[in-house]
Image (cartoon, helix red, strand yellow):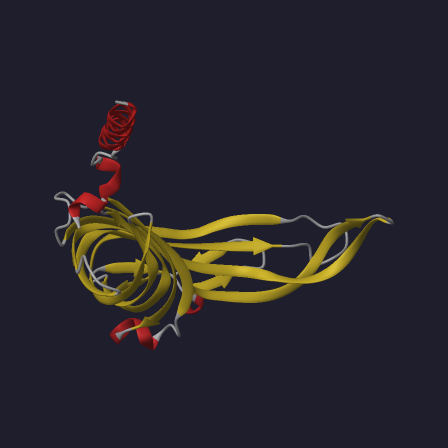
Length: 248
């Protein structure tokens, strides 16, 4: 009789444990279907743009959503930018430390020329395995912005920052790459390497050839009109969708 009671007690405990595990099993969530990436980039001007610029560097953040779990399609938003031109100069700057404040001669960015973009579109990716190729096509806007930074040319002088020119245009981009993925608690994480062509077919931008400073301190700017296409090489970190153990 005691043996029967013990057996029933063990079976009851096992049943309770299994039931608890079934109740506590994680359910699918929309949060599992989001993806994120951060990349550093190197930009190489193409065509007409290459005649006036040598290239630059910058960064990008991407956010994606997988509409159907474990399927290749991702709706992707990417935003980023790079500096494609800069001029260095020397001026004076007040510096403070434990011994007090004093004026020191420094080198600084006198003028900077930057490109930024915000684009949205579909991405298709491999969803399983350690190596996961992907490709995408995006459309949105690209902006160009140039600024002048002036530090005092004599100790005690005035420091100023001034916008020289800005513009926006419609743009598209097409890219492909590969990810090396690992599993972390069901969510894919890894590194990605990709290349992309960003097409700015009708851009208006400024570079050093179009900047002149007048004796009275004002600026004359002559923007360039035309294509400003860029080949970008991207390397960064990727956080992919989560796959539950019950879906594997």
